[in-house]
Image 1 (tube, rainbow, N blue to C red):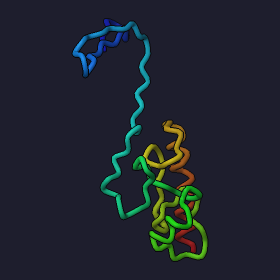
Image 2 (image 1 turned 60 degrees about the vertical axis):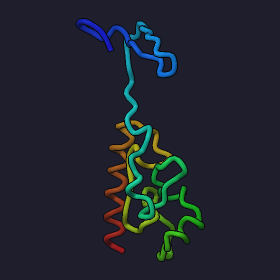
Image 3 (image 1 turned 90 degrees about the vertical axis):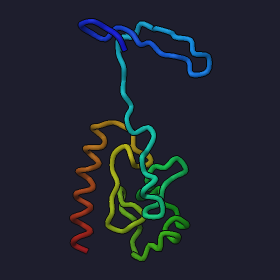
Image 4 (image 1 turned 180 degrees about the vertical axis):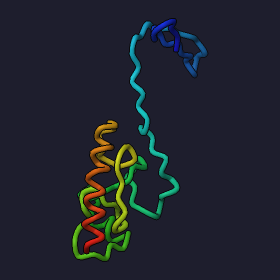
Length: 119
C-alpha cells in the first residue's frame, strides 16, 4: 500500500509469475474473519464445511443428534450445538461479516444467556 498524506495505490506481486503491478486505488475494505480460526473447536461445537460455527436454525437434526443435544427445545438463534454456548460475529456461519452486526448479535446473545440461566 502506498501514499503520501492519504492512501493512493496498491502494489501487488503475482505469486505465479512474480510480476509486480500497481493500481491507483483510493479505498480499501479490510475483511477480517473471512477465514475462520476455529479448528480448535472441532468436535466441541458443530462447524460448517468452511469452518464457521453453526448456530440455531442452521443446525440440522443430524447435527444435534451427533452433538448429543439433550434439551427438549431447539437451540436458540445464536446457540451452538452445545447448550448454553453462543457464537456471534464473523466466526458464526450466516453472519453478514460487519462490525455492527457482530455487536448486535452480542446483545442478542446476552438476552439468550439470561434466558438459559432462568431455565
